[in-house]
Image 1 (cartoon, rainbow, N blue to C red):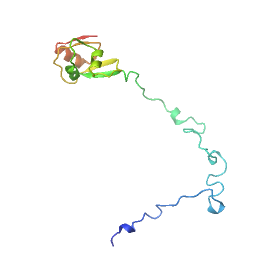
Image 2 (tube, helix red, strand yellow):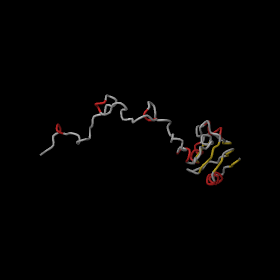
Image 3 (cartoon, helix red, strand yellow):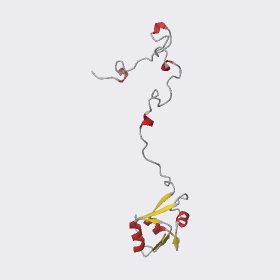
Image 4 (cartoon, rainbow, N blue to C red):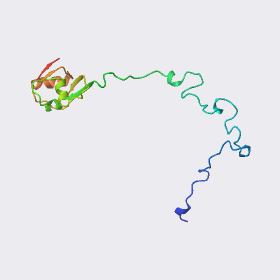
Length: 147
């Protein structure tokens, strides 16, 4: 026997009608409407404060705090050696030059050069932080670093 699309039905007991509460004694859910007698949860709006555990110290206060948000997160920026290779400016390269050419966001106060990519230009860097590898690459290309 094959199944027909017009004969498909949900499983027995899968779909039940919603219980209409507070509709008289004969319904079996009249008077207290399934809320029991008195007490906080019998009242309108009686669920209390979110996270409230009846006076016991709530879990969000019992557990220790973890981690932190770095205040320097938005103020620091990274520049690759491959980005420095693309810089059009000549002479000393500092944060202002990198901001002007769009390699660093306007809000950055600290810029760190990281060793990613190649550098063949002779550059003079001023006021930038460098990783050990980036420092070697700049000096190997004949550049200078001023703090």
